[in-house]
Length: 173
Ligand SMILES: CC(C)(COP(=O)(O)OP(=O)(O)OC[C@H]1O[C@@H](n2cnc3c(N)ncnc32)[C@H](O)[C@@H]1OP(=O)(O)O)[C@@H](O)C(=O)NCCC(=O)NCCS
Image (cartoon, rainbow, N blue to C red; front, side, top):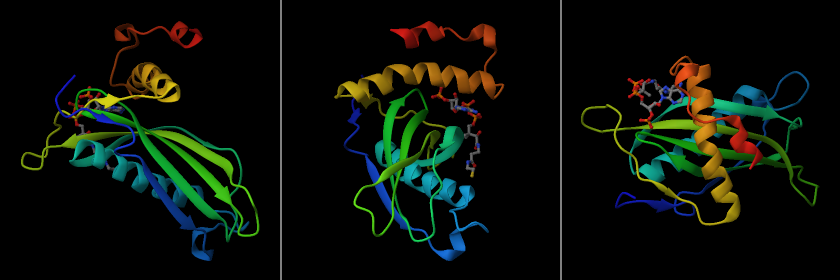
């Protein structure tokens, strides 16, 4: 483990937004692209806190839109670091939505964003601190991150499928 490894709590980020008319489409629902922008900001804050660095988004995966988000809803985005590799780090995002007159939030979206930390002098990728998972849920996200990493590298053409080492059988454990 490298010296400056950090727990997930240290960089956990929560962001709240109110859906205003300019954020919506013709149906009065939040535009997907506006939500993605907020998710990008929340996850970038989380990644830069963990890495104590400038970071850039390198990949967005598994972004789901389970429920529409309406004009006037309050959107809460949580971002947590799941695992770092060498110069990159995976962030898990969940989006919860609540109408002003509602008692409870509902989960509307989730996604995994990957960031690369950049050295501020050379602007090239630099090593990032390890993530220390503590709870069972954090450990599960940490273990599965290695599979998601290979999948995204293969799907983006960065890795040959024949070079992928991890079998999906891992998920059945
Ligand atoms: C991110 C960037 C610096 C990486 O540069 P690069 O020359 O590809 O660097 P490397 O090949 O050494 O890859 C660096 C890391 O990114 C990861 N990576 C590269 N492409 C990836 C992809 N499509 N998905 C996931 N990870 C990826 C690599 O696996 C590596 O991670 P690791 O060191 O933890 O193993 C470069 O691609 C870049 O500047 N992209 C634009 C980023 C940007 O502007 N984002 C904002 C857009 S709005």
